[in-house]
Length: 530
Image 1 (cartoon, rainbow, N blue to C red):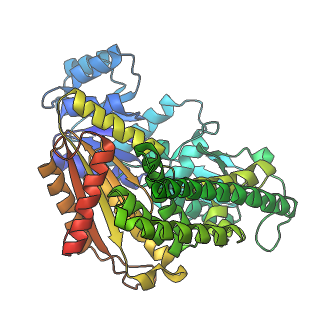
Image 2: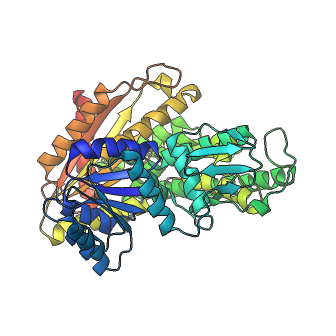
Image 3: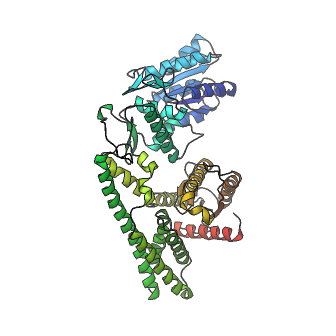
């Protein structure tokens, strides 16, 4: 459950936050009434702990304003003013309860539990699912009387699903409910917690998997009556569904190969037009975009050579192919086609049978088998449409309001020997680490996306080139200083470089800004600096 604490006395707030966290509550804290009001408007809370005497907006006015807008979130007032008049004033303003300072911490926690039970009176004191039991009053989870040792986040995730059995929670909704604003995780972290919880429940002997993955949406509590014993083969898949999964994998792999071929054809068309001196801007831009996509997707499917060829083709197209480069360009395109043909003859990648992918889909009905492979295809076939749209909208807003806009490209390069299969997991950990760091260092309104090929793109609205440069410099400094260590404690060497372009001085549209940022990135690499 999520609690908003609006308290300006840190001597009270600090131990209170620790006690609430120990009880598996997620706490957002602010010392300012107006900031607290902004949080209450922006996020959904189960309870608001509210001091009466606050800067900029006092607790009584806070209550009155919240109730006047129809918001019925539970409110517990905290104050040192122990008078009947103040109590009546607070309750009349809409508070649900009133605690006087100094208060006993354990009593306050009991009052909070009582309020939360009142707010959800239909909820049973003991949450159950099959032979699994969760007691909110003691924060204990048991299976057949044996206690399970869960992390705080695993406990909170399980409690949330048990309390709301009909609701489907997306990754972003889980982040909103289970993490404070100061520590928002990447979506990959959600998946890790779900996987860890599933493993512990299975090991403890819970009859079935309580967590159901709803493809494309999120997670929810599985209905216990749906559980049926299944006979699994040696890979863990029910025998009745193994053939279905294999058929679905073949179908998805055919779709992927078709997309790779279409992208290669678009580049070949540009090559032919170039030889005939008929390469127009539309066809050239299409070839450039498809080369960029191939540089990421080919590497994902095991063709590092194809990825490097696509990068070289993209570079030539970005800088406009000169007459002296036409022959080289055509040779690169021909070599790229050969790499795509080699990939066409291969079987579906081994990644499709990866334990993490299968773990993400616990239900192996025919529909769920389709979800497994389609979800994988969705992850592996790069799709930047949404981030491009977000970048365009941010740039358009900057133009409309006559403000600045900056586009940054962050690239990480690792030694060639670390790009083999043995180090692929370490590389993914580094990429995830970078993504999480970027999300903590930039604003929520900034556009941050991973475009494959170890490249992140960051769009910063209302940000000048100089400010954007400072932000990226700070990020690079942190990345360089932090030791990126694999699970096996082996250091992973990686170099970081960035390029930045600003509107309006470096370009008036997204394509021009991307080119300028790319050129700045290449210059930084050539100079051996960031």
